[in-house]
Length: 423
Image (tube, rainbow, N blue to C red; front, top):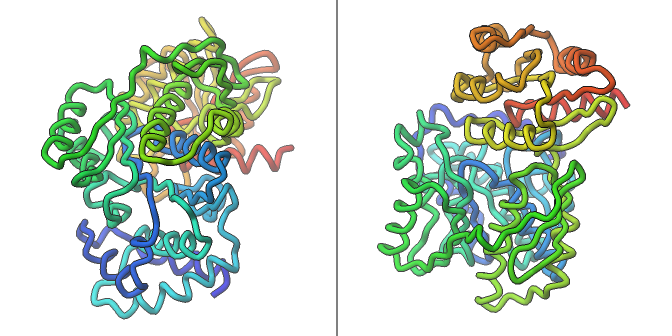
């Protein structure tokens, strides 16, 4: 297969008609020789911050001299972003080659694997062929029944910030969502948790007790942010001082602190990560679409806030950077998210909004989102395309104003592509 043919085949396999479970991915990997058994993993689950924490971990480990696989989702602009080794996206020819192995195994099964299961299998084969020392593996949805949870006990399980998301599948309560995420905690494992959400924290602590897993929780008293700007932040996380992180967003220093707590656990297990690598790795982190500055005149920001928990963090950052300012927004939201709460959080900052439909069948109709904004006193207009919406938001902001695009990770890639074409 070519890379294009491989993607077409992967995307032809939905998940809606399939019952959740690990049976399909286990059978698929068994037919492929169980590549996951020869790999070491850091398994990352949570509601928000997963991608940023994964990016920090991968960058630090690479700086320490390890060959690092990184498997994340969704992609923003290119499918290949999902599968990387030391920052390099899987090449087209390699994607086609691994799918030449995956496809016959999948089609020999009584129940065909889903899109995400095919991607997971392809990623594991690629990481094994590239002889990765460790793989940073992000869950797709939940944890317990997510295809990524087919692995055995990882080197480390990391639980990021918790909130309500995918309630229709994982819910209906926060405790239910936490229990699904806690599924990545394995017997005798080592767990690092963001903490800060009492209801979820108790679920994680209980799971660790029951499974004999060691638990370390992030201690935010160790974190001191010295400077916060649109270029990133400088902070200390005791005992380390004067750390630089080129990710904007008031929440990113906390994500980095969680990654550092995870790095400490790895060091205790014998992984060689010198302080210089830790500093170098953090300073080199790149993670597009998370409070990313695309332009300056006007300031044009892009953020992947795609649920109420993420929107709250984005709004706090916008208030910190632009106190007392009203902004122009470009919005697009998934219909299965709590759009009402997201709009409620955003409305006090909005001068006006332009609404588009993100590129997903789950996208909310722009007219419905405009109605929610209007109910909260925000002037809002639908636009037929991301390009039109972006130009309208930039024009509304004016040369000295601020425009911000957010609401869905599916919107992020389209905005970045439209911006690059514009320049």
